Length: 280
Ligand code: X90
Image 1 (tube, rainbow, N blue to C red):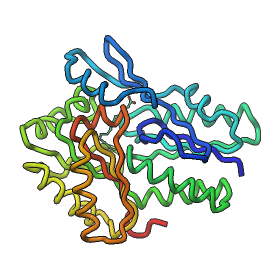
Image 2 (spheres, rainbow, N blue to C red):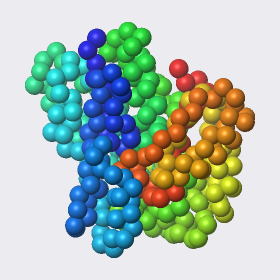
Image 3 (cartoon, helix red, strand yellow):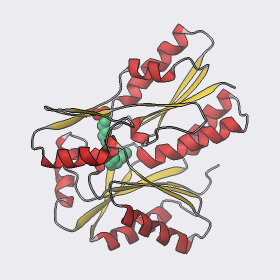
């Protein structure tokens, strides 16, 4: 089957090797500059420039047309988006999917609302690829990915929620809790696809221990873990070792977050996508 996987750029995935894939970029916008979340954007430079910039910064989601150009000429499209609870991306992708099927009778496009972002989207993308490579039909892939995504989770650690609060993605009171020196806020993606704070931790060591406790209490029993970080590889490695100490067969990958997730998770932030018991 001719299948193309599409994800918006909050999935931090630029290519899937040989597999047909395209990323639909969100962008970060200031009064002075735009940073499209593409392979060409130097994320380190962006984070440094934004730290020195004191004006307003915001983000915007891809348009339906951006999604249509990402879909290209594929017969079958499966598209994964950032949570509809925090972004208009899912809505734009759905409009594109409907246009796509109307403009090209016979073609199919399915959009999955991840109710999450970053590494949890990465898990879904990998699963869609695996299902396609196993020869599953389009309809079976759509059903199975909906089911799989109910058995994955996202937890994360943030040092600052300034950009989330400034852009109305969390209540200011939640952002304040993390604003103190040395405090890390441990949170999860809620079932509704919004940010749910779990615990305030003093220092990174405590935060990492808390993250592992939470991951287990949310159903991790071994399996895949994907860790995306904002210039905090040390914490990502330490977390990986902690997981491996308890689950020696855990399958873990670490990578830097791209522009959109780095903008919101901010320097030092780390997002963890994981499989729960029953994920198939
Ligand atoms: O449409 C837009 O402009 C994009 C808005 C995105 C807002 C949230 C991005 C979050 C990035 C930081 C924390 C993860 C929260 C996940 C909760 C489901 C990563």
